[in-house]
Amino acid sequence: GAGNWGAWSAASDGLTIDLTDPAGTVLINADAPYTTSRAVTLSLSATDAEGTPITRMRFSHDDQTYTDPEPFASEKAWTLTEGEGAKRVSGQFENAAGRWSADATDTITLDQTAPDAPPAPTEGVPDGEVDADGTYTVTWEAVADALSGIQAYALQEQVADGAWEDVATLPGTSVTLSDRRHATLYRYRVRAQDGAGNWGAWSAASDGLTID
Image (cartoon, rainbow, N blue to C red; front, side, top):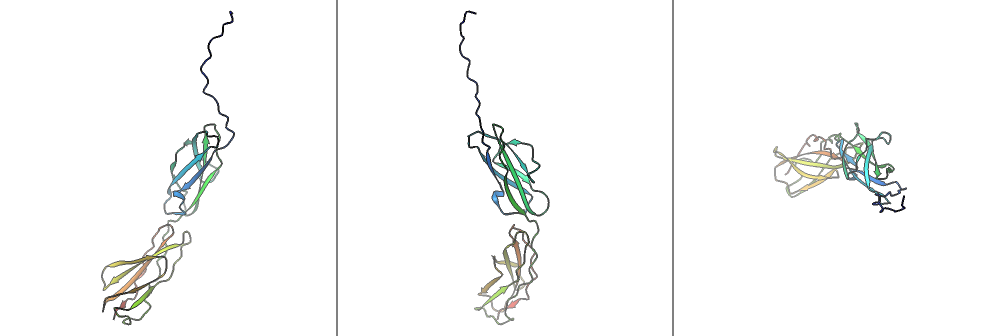
């Protein structure tokens, strides 16, 4: 009643008005085009133009149904939907003001099927027509892979009915060889690897070539 004013209180924590949605990115397996496993890793980033902290995130396979919000992190383990083919993962990120980002999306192709075995290779020359100093070319037919294509072929040789040994891994369908052993039989087999990394079965062995 005497009119005396007391001291001011401490200031409130304050309120920042944020009218801008955050933005983020989602990368599946570091933006790889293919995977052989449904278990993948999401690499995540998010920013806010007003500097408001990013607090939570949520994810979806179909941009319709989202997981429950969880604390923001830079990585998350994720399981793709069943069945081979193109897969989509979307993420949304929330800032401390309660604003959610638009969908950040990445895609990857799930390929779990190995390519077929090629037909048996051929040496391209009749038996006994190549001497130890000569050359010959082993060739084979290309095979296809509908989901991820073919990225490589592995060629092995068998010397005188011994163990199979690696000769080359290459994208093409032929290898030229030389410096073979005199009076020795060489056979060859090949297999294909698709773009996702699946190796197919070995082909049947070639008829073989005996060096003159």
